[in-house]
Structures are given as C-alpha cells and as structure tokens.
Amino acid sequence: MSTFDQTHIWHPYAKVPNPANTYKVLSADGVYLNLDNDKRVVDGMSSWWSAIHGYNHPTLNKAVTTQLDRMSHVMFGGLTHEPAITLAQTLVELTPDNLTKVFFTDSGSVAVEVALKIALQYWHNKGQSDKHKFITIRGGYHGDTFGAMSVCDPDNGMHHLFSSVLPKHYFVKSPSMVAMDEALSDLEETLKAHSSNIAAMILEPVVQGAGGMRIYNPQYLIKAKTLCQQHQVLFILDEIATGFGRTGELFALEYVDVEPDILCLGKALTGGYMTLAATLTSDEISNTVGTLMHGPTFMANPLACSVANASIDLLLNSPWQDNIANIEAILNSELSSLRTEDNVADVRILGAIGVVELTHDIDIEKAQQLLIEQGVWLRPYGKLLYTMPPFIISKQELLSITTAIKMVIKQL
Image (cartoon, rainbow, N blue to C red; front, side, top):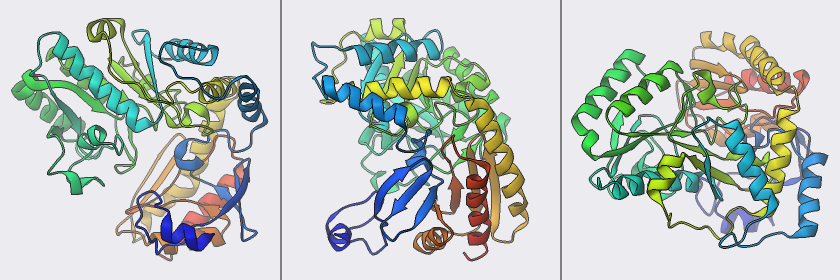
C-alpha cells in the first residue's frame, strides 16, 4: 500500500513518485493522529488549520450521521434544504451587517474564484468593464486555482512558475514587510494611477497564511478600505485561514470592525470534517451582478452544511476565546526565547498561531522525522516551522509541540 501511494498518488505540493516519506494514519481522536507504526502524535496543524475541535468529535459525528440518514447530497440548482438555509442565516448573522448574500462553494480556492468573478461582473454590469484588474499586497496566498493564483505573490509565492501565463494584476508593498505608512503610500499611489481598471482589492486580514505566515497591523485594513472607497474599488477579505477564531477574534476583520464588500470563508467552517467554503457579499453588489454563472456540482452539500452548523454551534457555545488566549500565552512563553537562536530569523505569534522562521530553508523530511520521534505532527514549509493547533488542545499537549519545535530547531 505505501509503495503504491509513493509511486502513484500525487500529494499536495509534491512530486510523483514521491521520494519523501508519507505517514499512514489509521485513526484520529481528540488532538491525536494514530499512525500505522504504533505512533500516536499530537496534531499541531489541525489538518491545515481546519480541525479546530480536533478529531472524532461526537457532536460533529452525530451531525453527519443524522444528515446521512436523510440525504447525503442533492443538487442545489432549483432545489434547497434546511442545512444550507440554516448555515446561510448563521453566516449572515455572524459577519458584518452589509453582508447579506451567500454563495456556497466546495473549497477555499473556489470561494476566491467566485469573489473575483462577482467583482468583475459587478463592474461589467455597471458599464465599467475596463475595471478588470485586481490589486493586493505582496506575500499573500489565495489558493491554487487559476484566478486565485493570479492574486498570489508572483515573485515569492509558490506559483511563480505560472507567472508568464497568469493574468497580470497590481501588487503593492505589504504592511507585514514594511512600515504601514510606506505600505499605504504605495497603495494610494497605485490606486491613483490605475483605479480606472481595478475591480477590487483582495487581501488576508491581519495574518498572511501560506504566503509566509506574516502578521500585520489591523489598522491597515481600515485605511486600505477607505482608499478603495475613494477610488471606487471593491474590497475583498479572504478569511479562509483566519476565520472562526484562529486569530483570537471570531473573524480577523473584527480587530477593527472593517466591512468588506465581499468575504471568503472556508477551512474551519466545517470543523475540518467536510470540504465547504462560502463567499458573502452585499445587497447592492448582488443586485447589480444579477445571475452569477457559477454552480459547483457539490454546492451546499447537505452533509457539509449540517456539520458546519454543528461546528459553529459547538464553537460559539464553548469558551473558545479563553482557549485561544491560553494557547497564545503558552506559545509566547515557550517560543519567544527562540529569537536569540543563531538560525532563527523571527518568531511570530497571534492567537492560536505560532511561527518560527529560520534563516534557511528547512529540510522538511528530516524535520518531520525528528518531530514524529518527539510525538508531534507539524508540516514545515520553506523557512517556516509553525503550529496552528486545535482549539481543544490541553496545556501539556501544547507544551509537547513547543518542546519539539525547540528541540528540532537545534538540529536543522
């Protein structure tokens, strides 16, 4: 089985045949992954930041099995169902007041694609079809599909191979890399020069995820939104990675209560159980867009919507803010001292996010083997060794992650 996997199955961001080891998971419960080598490891990744309640949670299991007895799937064209209606109502209630319309998709990348299409169609229908470009900050990541790739960093991002064939957009300085005033000045100058052909600005609020795990001043969001309004440019926030508590706020936009014109959600939406995402927008935009020509086969899948409803209820009825504050305090206490290590360039912490950036690229296979030996599952990339644990993690379980990080860094 492992040989077939290694020689025939493409894993994310890997080649096939895959020279690197993959670890076979037999089961998962709580914050643990149970591997086929009798190793039980603490998952510090929440399955790429989605499994916020851990694994095999009885409440979420019940939501799936109860819905399965009713129907597993039904097309969403011309039909609807209670789980989708309930979820849409909840998302409208939880997000900023201007966001009243919901489009369900089956992945975060597609949620971004839909957001871009909405922005383009909005301006086309207003008779301003020249507004067909986008603007964003460097160091961002918005997905792996074609449109989403085009608004990822074209030089330092993982998709630079495709830069010659992707649509060309505007990239400005990021407040995570330069002073905020300098970043805002660059944005303002670019908008002044090119707003006549810019449909929207898209960015990840407060935390840039897979583009580098960088954190920036939330005040940038308010000032960027104001500049966009002044230059008739829509404002899209991609909360796929940050949404549902990860940063310490339910949504990162709540740090400054900014209202985007379009909002993308995903990852933790279903607690990591099913693939589901959503794109929200306003009455004014949806009325202008009219018919949106997009319809995924598994749009608003009932199983996914049901477990999303259960996951959101579970989150909101838990002491999640206290849990995140405790995680942040432990990460600060345990990882901050690494800044003095010779091979550490930076340590960044916010909410349930802990990032150690090294001065050199990490040997991922070596790092993972060392981490597994310490009973921990992390997935480094580039120069980054980081953790985004489930919110239910205990102090001792989190300490096992931070201890492993500190030990492994000395051997990389």
